Length: 293
Image (cartoon, rainbow, N blue to C red; front, side, top):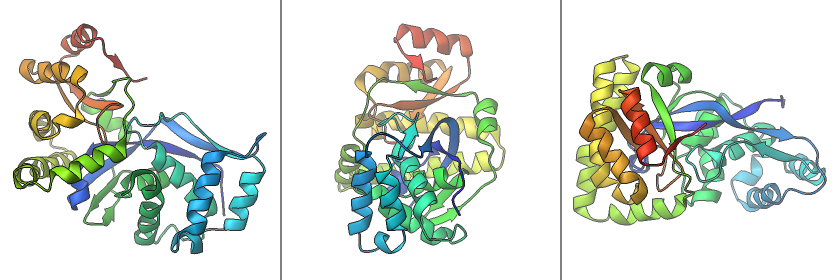
């Protein structure tokens, strides 16, 4: 039975790109931006219609949705109103898929393995390949940890994580092409040197960040966040905009803040752990950057 609700954005705390290799990733919902259904409008919404056709023609998805209801809803001018910016790493496509799945699927919520599989197929329409993590967070409105396709729902209060560790979002004011960045990553891991950096530097550090957060070990959480920030300058150099790299390095060199990717990178938002508020604010001003509100 459908019930009115919002579909929050998501923030990937850790696991960017390496999740595509089956390693763990952890994401949390963020209600600062969200999507919600508007039940009628003056015209047919093109993105919804296109997605309806995608589901209708997909051999697996078409059996899992109330297609007649979905079609009728689109024809009455319904649309998803969203405050989540596209191409910013906040899960705009994830909330889109979650909203459609919630309203029109014929699948039980409790079958999380099947829900995850179907949401992966849905979001692949946008990115070519999806881990399914974003729409799972948006659909269940819960922190989600994924590893080798196994879904867990750790008890993490999103707001508390941000407050306790003074995490902030920086707006690069640059949109990005997630599919292009994912394609670049897949090409890069064909090279043994790059793949070894992912396996020996990125994945172990990601795991330590997750473990320290879940075990409430703040010193280790800060230490490994910094370690990932340092490694990312080398390993994810193509995902960090040139206009942002000096700001990124300054935080590490002064030990006042540590940046990391927030999703695919390349633009959109970046996550920052702030240790010195005054120094951080000054650096923002010097580099003409702004917090995301």
